[in-house]
Length: 168
Length: 168
DNA sequence: TTAACCTTTCAATAATTATTGAAAGTTTTG
DNA sequence: CAAAACTTTCAATAATTATTGAAAGGTTAA
Image (cartoon, rainbow over all chains, first blue to last red; front, side, top):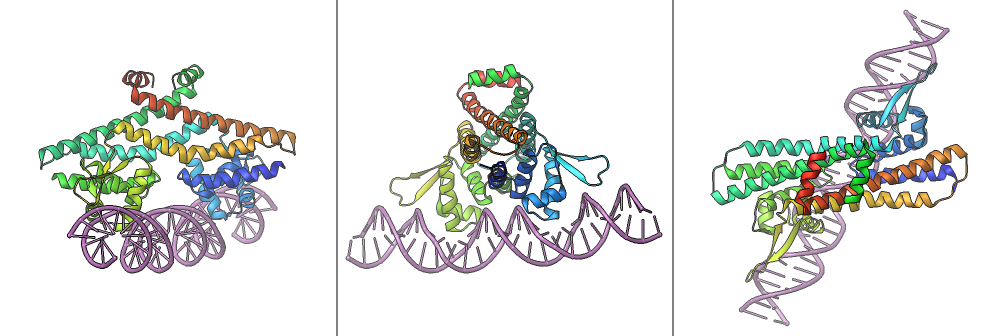
């Protein structure tokens, strides 16, 4: 298989997988493209390679920067900006986990805290069941947060990585 | 606050949070409703409570059953079916993780395996970079899988839960 | 200062995904 | 068997989300 063909396959497939990750196809494609080009690409190069509009590339590259998966770089003597993917897979994993925590867990936490603070009136048993539910869900959220933190630890500590694998 | 008000707030909010979890609003609302009713509800009761069409309720309840978050039950002497949520939060967490693993990780694994098996022709350095990328991403996927397994372990073992919390 | 070059914004449009509701299907009951 | 009670399906429609591209905004170079 030609390398170009492999890369292209990767980019296309990564794009469609993006949707199951809650990420837009364009964003995932651009990410895949940049991951496969160690030296970074300019907006126009990205547009050409993945066949997307300038606005789309601009938006999604900035979103990738928000996720800390891509950084902007300027080359001496060049006017335009180049975008370079973070290539270390542990950092990628960590940034994705952190962003997902922020987007998925924090809003839940906020809701649960609000409801846990309320004083309810009504049928005693029903109230109790509802409050148990809230408290259980809180535990769940905490557990997910712990797991995220644990992943950070794993990344920075190879010994711990082996420990985890061993007990898993 | 009236209990009914709290529940309703919970159901509405859970619904909008659903989208950040990659779950449709209706599915999340129905799930929240069933979580707050220990004895289960019938299709018509769900329709009434969350104001959704029969078709929508049917589809999403069945999706919740696929996720193993809800089970169907028939009551002696009643013709209709009742839907009961899984109320144990550890099992809920585990089923969600497993479903997400299946949806999010497995397709990536398939793609990576396919590409890793290919023999590429082209610039040597570029090929090497691309293959390193593939292999790194494989490691990432494995790590996520290990984390999922770890969570299962945590759930079945309270001592391990404390261990994780301690080292996190 | 102005032209060239590049980035950003955003209203319009397209694509995707969710929802409805009526019709068809299924099972139970009399 | 037919009617009643319920569930499932699915084409049509609505709602949401992604994408375009042209115009506006910046910045640098001549």
